[in-house]
Image (cartoon, rainbow, N blue to C red; front, side, top):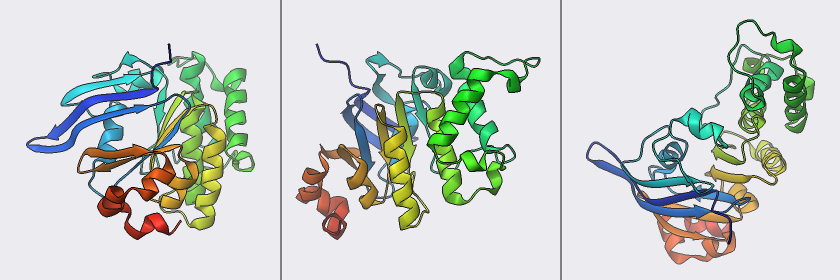
Amino acid sequence: MSAAPAIELREVFKSFGKTQIIRGVNLAIGRGERHAIIGPNGAGKSTLFNLVSGRFPVSSGTICLNGADITGLKPYQINRRGLSRSFQITNIFHRMTVFENLRCAVLWSLGYRYSFWQAVNGLRDANERAAEVMEGIGLARRRDALAGLLSYAEQRALEIGITIAGGAEVILLDEPTAGMNRSEAAHAVDLIRRVTAGRTLVMVEHDMGVVFDLADRISVLVYGEVIATDAPAAIRANAAVQEAYLGTAANSH
């Protein structure tokens, strides 16, 4: 018997008032897969992320994580079951150092709970894990720099580090290369490929070069509906996708 998908959406709908944003999405993302969700502005991509991560409740339908129903759970409950996400807008502690940001991210996964009398500096496993992640995202030389003073690309790298630091098996990245120039985006792609190896990656991304470079499969979301899910080459050649979204961009990469 094959393993349950890492993420599965069944007939998922989401409305805000009378406005229907997500319209009956069915989607299964396999374990260890790198999956991109693309579509025009207003297609519902970030809303879909917010539904999967528990930030928004579904209006109807079911969402499963590794075969377990997570519909209606709070974001922190879903996170503890092995799903972690980044945001379109960089979400870090600006007045803490790079190392402190990463250490905060690893504490809960290592079993540490809120404690006013436990000195975090003495938590060897947390410190070692934070240092390991920091090395992995290429920010070891910036260990003691305040996060708010990092370059934009460095802040995005730190956020990716925070997202993976807890050891989650399913990673959601919302536009990880937004605002980057070509060389920064290429560096980010290398970083994402490296740090998500062996995990399930789901990303929303506008840069088609990044999408076709990273994704094993791509889903195209248009007006809240998935109109195609396939391998990158098939998506590139899909006439309906080209008409709805990609246009000449599909042929330029």
